[in-house]
Length: 218
Image (cartoon, rainbow, N blue to C red; front, side, top):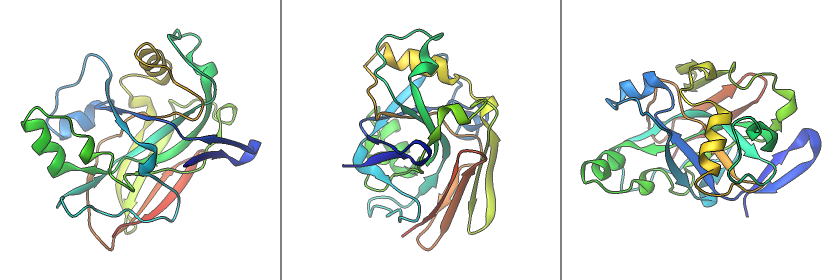
C-alpha cells in the first residue's frame, strides 16, 4: 500500500485515488494546442503509480516521448461528498509536490482515436510524490512558485496563482461527482514549460514552503 505522510504531524494516510486536472493553466493548454476548458477536465492515476523522492521513473517500452509536469498536490484529510466551495478547504490535510509523468506520444494517439488515455498517465512510476506539509502551514496555496529542472537546467517556473480552477472549486466539483476519502490526492495541473525526459536524466521539482523531489529517469 502506498502511504502519504505529513511528517510535521506524524500523520499517515493510505493513498486512495489520485484525481488529476488537465489544462488547469491556460498557458500550458495553449502550448499543447488545446482549448482552455470551461469546466475542470479530470483524469485519474492509480495509487500503484506513486513513487517517492529519490525513486526512479521507468519509461515504458511502448513510449518514445515521456514528459514531466510539476504540480501542486492536495491531500484530502476528511471525507468530502457534495461539499460547497465555502467549506471545501476544511477537507484538506496537506500539500505536496508531484510530477505528473505523461507519455505524450501515447496520449496523442489515444486522443486522436477518441479513446481514454490512462495508459499514458497511470503507468507504474508515473506519479512521483513528496511528503506533505500540513495545510495550516501554507498561508495561500494560490501564491506558490512551482519549479522543475532537468539535469540542473530550469524547464518550468510558474505560479499557482495562474490556476484556472482554484482548490476550493476543484474539491467542490470533484466531490459532486464522486466522494473524496481521506488519503485521496488531487493533482491541480501544471504551468507551461513541459517537455521530454530520457533515460539518464534527473528531474528536480520544488515548490517553496511545500517540498522538493529529485527523481532519476531510466
